[in-house]
Length: 362
Ligand code: SAM
Ligand code: SF4
Image (cartoon, rainbow, N blue to C red; front, side):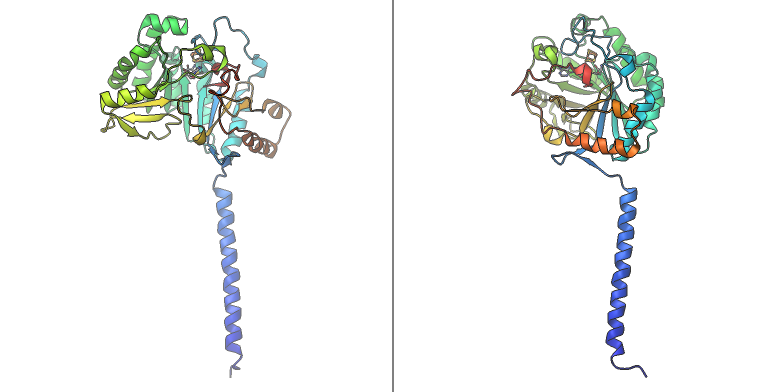
């Protein structure tokens, strides 16, 4: 015979056991999630950092008038260049914290010996699922196949004009034919996406914007028009032009509408309604995009620059060379990301940044 008090007491014990089991199941699921899901790098302003632009060299075979001055010699010593092992280790630590996109840049990245080997190592880092390259294309014909095999899917190629004498005047080298041959080779190799970066300059190449649209339409390339940034005296002396009127003009002329390009970065895009042509506008001066900035830049010497338009930086080379443990490296990355400033001050303080774009990687 069961006593009358047993039923309510049994009920209470059962509920307690169920709650305890539930709490344990919940903690186990949460623990599993925390172990498996990548953590996220978030800066002091709540922006998620998911993208590193890696400058593999500060040298270049061109001297674009808005970037590197003629006669410039103050390059980083080879002994200070991060080695491929150091780069792989540091980027693996970033990837462990949730970062998943890398762009190889410079200077001219194809001048770094064995770049396809480095690209393949980076493409194989667990967590990295987007590897791209910015290049001036002078060496692209030679390396396109190896780069594609290495795992690079997207290319950005600098091309400010389609006229031989203009390219020679802007880059100080007669390279238009070589660049176009490199682009043709990349197209045939079958990169998923090729973007043409055209820095628009008043009185220098602004009369060629429509010609560049026609070229990109014909070739199946995405065009991106870029405003000059006051980086170093070259950037400050460049013939800046506001791209907002150009945007309105192209929208009207080609019937373009606002569009979003996955992985499109800070550019604002317009495209034809059928998606056959897209043009992006990178307008750091006339309409900045700092509130959605998701990137940091690692220079060839291991300096992490947190913003193109500020001096905030963090040196990783000493850590890498002085035997920092993986957890020390992770802690340093988290600390460095907290230094990311809210925004650049290209308008308020145009003289602030003395380094050229080629030193940071654009
Ligand atoms: N050498 C490669 C190239 O030219 O594509 C990669 C490095 S380059 C520094 C990266 C990008 O930065 C290029 O598209 C270039 O046009 C852009 N750039 C360089 N200096 C600039 C400046 N002062 N303002 C705006 N864009 C600049
Ligand atoms: Fe070299 Fe690129 Fe700078 Fe031109 S923009 S000088 S190609 S690094």
